[in-house]
Length: 266
Ligand SMILES: Nc1ncnc2c1ncn2[C@@H]1O[C@H](COP(=O)(O)OP(=O)(O)OP(=O)(O)O)[C@@H](O)[C@H]1O
Image 1 (cartoon, rainbow, N blue to C red):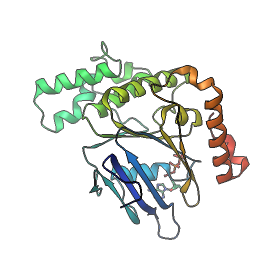
Image 2 (cartoon, helix red, strand yellow; image 1 turned 135 degrees about the horizontal axis):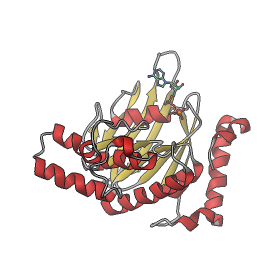
Image 3 (cartoon, helix red, strand yellow; image 1 turned 60 degrees about the vertical axis):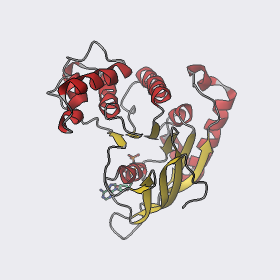
């Protein structure tokens, strides 16, 4: 059992290392405890192993060393308590919004009426009511992202894992969706783990930010973000927000050398 673990712990990443080819470590000795309802972001330079770590937590790949447990149960495969919002969205373009959202429920054998009810709730939660019957091709990038989130929400996972969900969106849409995600989290009490390249996004959304350094990917720093909840847009221009930004930038710079600092969106 890791130090600090207690009844509020939902996810335990315990001394996880990963080597894809057995010649070098992609991840080395990563330990993180995540509390129920926590918003945790993972940030680090391109190729440092963020997606690999998320894929291990999702159960898509196995660590070479160490273990991951959810609610004390060892993760060795994907499970319904962990919902994943994929970077490329993985929507079915030939199905409508509602059909995309309810697809997983249909596959699980849920009765049509219940499926419909749950899907409409999820669609409402992401602000897409009125667009249920539109095809994916008709939607903007932001709306597609909302569908992808609704499709994960509808299965009511305890933890949502998101790999750069907003990176392809323009700044305004991105901030709008960040607000919506925070509102959804507040309402549902879900635990969210977000991989991001954006220092701003990591700080605005999170209770804690894990900064990874690369070669091998390991934890450089875990920063507690004490900005209170609910968050509000004006926070982004406060002195305390900027202070967190500075601290995180410093950690990331130290990890990779100053020349790579430009890689981060701030
Ligand atoms: N399936 C795989 N087989 C072999 N090597 C892999 C595999 N997936 C990722 N890698 C390598 O592992 C390292 C970490 O990749 P990963 O995608 O986890 O990093 P990342 O931090 O998410 O990067 P980015 O920010 O660019 O998405 C990279 O060097 C990558 O080339």
